[in-house]
Length: 359
Image (cartoon, rainbow, N blue to C red; front, side):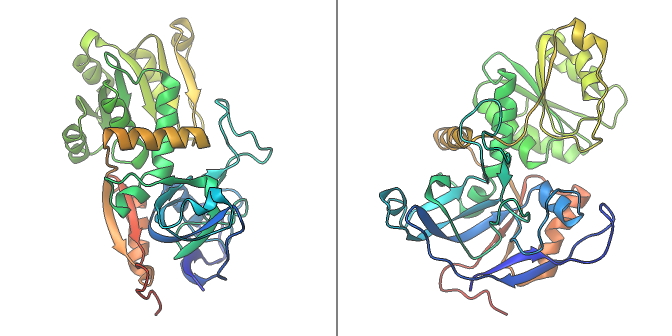
């Protein structure tokens, strides 16, 4: 029976409760004709996993393994050729289902169903083995380690779509990526830089700004400083940005109206500051587009992985914990995320085949 990590129910109100991690054993499954069985080698956290533990995410489950990001090796397949071709390959998993290729959003009535910790999708990657349809696999970029490959799926997909929607990730364009240090922001920085754009970043941490410059950022500003937007535009050739990729919300539209060229784009993939934002008239008068963006389609996932492989990009891994027996060590990754300590992704490496993860 494969071991995994889920959450245990305790009493508490949403936002106040913090569900403890729990090691569980789940029944071993055999793949159907079009499925594959994957031995997971590494899995990575996203902010949604922290929200699940705080009961700030819909449809949570106390029996489904956590996490949506995973890398592993196919150890068994179904009888269909579409599955058999994956035998023995190292793969990464599309982090959700229900969205094939529409540019507008998920085609399925139930919407996009992300893996990890909810009733809507019974799978999660923080488990030794899982069975999934072969169509959800992509070959892991060979230049990436298991931890780096596991760090890619959801943040890479989210960043890819958010940047693509701006239509500004190209040579000669200037882009601001806010909140650098998180996984999505770092991938957006890498994607836009690799495509030839000049990328500027913001953070409340000077160390993170310096690390971002080492990764290719053209400049950075501390958003805790009053008037930071003036400091930023002073760095930009022509004094105006072409686009902003933002995961915080807050006053980004107000400040964006001052920083962007006419016709500029703001792509918002998250609102960690507040679920509401102010929309101001200068945005209308200057034809600035404010767009929501979340996750991405199966096609966008494949396109993103292809780009990462072609450009030899490497997701930033902040810290790795080995194994799933030490609950305190796993908890420490969530603490890093709660406190905003991480620069890059937080990853768990699972035991290799033949190694024991039993207590």
